[in-house]
Image 1 (tube, rainbow, N blue to C red):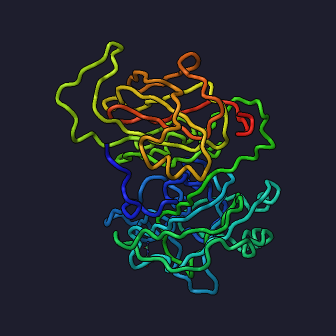
Image 2: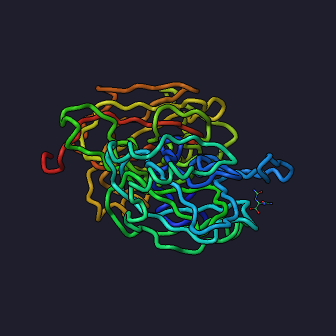
Image 3: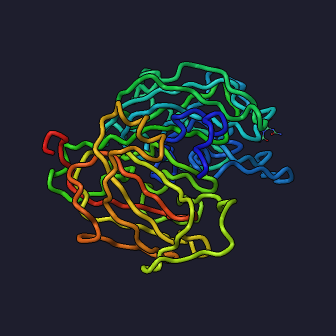
Amino acid sequence: MADRPLTSDRGPKFTELNDLVSQKAGGKILFATDDWFAVAENLLKVEPAAFDKDAFTSYGKLMDGWETRRKRKEGHDWCVVRLAMPGVIHGVEVDTSFFTGNHAPRVSLQAARLTSQDEAIIPRRVSKMGSEASAANMKKVAALKSEEWQTILPMTATGPGYSNTCRNYYRVQSRDRWTHLRFNIYPDGGVARLRVYGQVIPDWSKLPANMLMDLVAMESGGVCVGYSNVHYGHARNLIGKGRSSVMSDGWETARKIDRPAILESDLRGVLKVPGNEWATFRLGHPGTILKVVIDTNLFKGNFPDSCKVEACNIGMDEESEAMEKFGPPQWKLLLPTVKLSADRLHHFDAPDVKMCGVVSHVRLTMAPDGGISRMRLFGLRRNKANL
Ligand SMILES: NC(=O)NC(NC(N)=O)C(=O)[O-]
């Protein structure tokens, strides 16, 4: 079994959390002071930035990121981003890929909790290269007083977009729940991607207690807390919004190097293969799980033979110990091993789904390797005290 890569290979631990501003999850640019060379929407794209050395537009070199004009007046550039869903931010990645002589040399981040009435102050955005915010729109957006929002990342230097200096990671200390960000670049320049890692915090008071909901979904506050291998696609994609649109929007492991040449099946047709791959999750809220959905959407030549789901009820203090290792003792079988097929939704409920009581964490194991795009765990939220 492959072990989880060292964090130094993949960035700090907070980069395993969900990206709260990604376009895929619903993050949105609401305002930008300048979009001359490249529009601010590029900051929120999921795919890594690309570069074509020969591509130019009538405004200059085509860049895959947000790039403003060289400032010839006072001030600095900034944009306002609405988080895909309200949440707590643990850390930020400012990726300057390919911005070498033109990267934004310093950045800062401010945060706010806005209502839809507050947001209505912001003029409707027209995202267009070669444009800058009009004086009238600057005046309207000034009413938000975004320069006074709480600073969650003070002004700090970034590296230029070479492969060894483009990934700039910053830890965020505040544990408040935010809805909007103001991303400042000083004084101007380019940033390829902005990733804001954290956990969605639903407003539980607005959700009926007896509503059947996907308790592991990113939208419910679920997070991935461990995995064995995420070579082609991160395990957090399993709890992403909607169905996947590309294979990379699922959990996909590398092929096992030590896979045997000949495979045997047991009487139920489940392969007897050595090894497996696993991913563990903390539910957004503890609860009892009644239905499991496993989606192999778009995995055709690389779907796993089979999978199982286990669950347990542990405290946060036990999480790191239990989730880093493969065999903590508390796991109960929620969905015993089931055969999977290519590119389809698999629905399970009782008696396939076993009663495990109130659970806080789950582990999906697939054998021997391959890809699963989504896992949905529908249940009723319960307090641990109701055990
Ligand atoms: N060659 C460049 O990238 N020049 C300028 N940027 C773009 N995108 O053209 C600049 O200097 O800011």
